[in-house]
Length: 342
Image 1 (tube, rainbow, N blue to C red):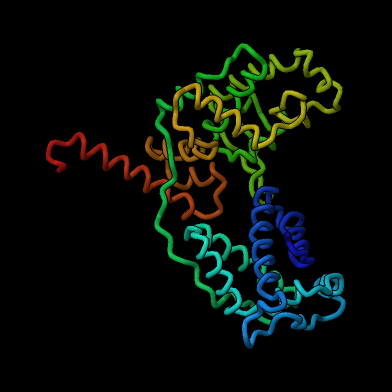
Image 2: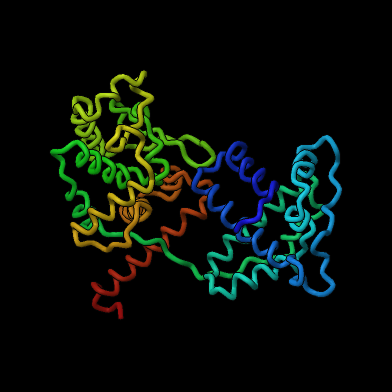
């Protein structure tokens, strides 16, 4: 059973309403923190506290009255939040050792460390803790994992599967075409409204991480697929209620069978179905299409800065990983084709 922490709840609200994190990212942060809180609660239970430990029952550091953190502390008053506030680097290393005993990968542990680093930075800014214990914690080294991409031939095979004669089939074709044509994240895709598609300029307005907007070009195949889908959707009697829901531009672009906004999970399920039909690798995900979009652009001469803007990456270094992938393919092709390569 998860232990209640007002600090964690308030941090979750901060991520959602101030930092504008996506619901999925917020849930990941909160899941990591719940695991940490559960470990702390178990560690400080009567009879479990290590000798010389300041837990349980250690008072949380004093917080200046009149601050938001003071209100949080007053509201919590619980032993769980006291333990969180009193944790030091040794305590957190104990939690990381606990994770290691379960065989978590270096990447997963690195993500949990990043979560705790943000959490304690937030607590320090609000005066809950005098110092951030995470400054003494190093992130484990991780091997470089290249993003997975599929070939143009595999993309073509996948995109040809949905039945374009049916409203929902044409919707699925438009979804797959849009994912590959624009490289948008699946969370960005399901957030699209009709007004975000500029048919005349062939552009798509995308709301990315932190609610930052960007414009990305729509290829003619994707644009044609979207236009065909809407042509079938609007007169379809199953979706008649969409025509009575106010401003057409505010309607979701991709709807489910009940006329509501399609979810990220539904997109994944649809993709799984089409992968099976096409006989393609079942581990391919919507994000694989994003990786393929970036890789194919770079392989065909697009510059890194342009790909960065199209993907909505804040840092160029995030985009640079795709250059390793295209270089790897180039090397493989060279070794195969050149008579004196090996």
